[in-house]
Length: 70
Image (cartoon, rainbow, N blue to C red; front, side, top):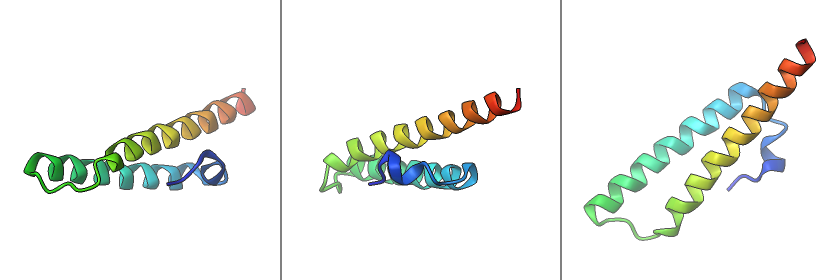
């Protein structure tokens, strides 16, 4: 589970890759839940929050880059 401090040194491309990985995991967890195979239900919440964390850091980087340019 990455925290914000782990995500800040990443480049925007790395953040996009991390987001894609987490979205795939979220899909797989939802699929497991629907078929009754999910054992760790708390993982769904963790992944959802990790996605939000990655998006927040990515948005902060975009905002900082925009301010730097203009």
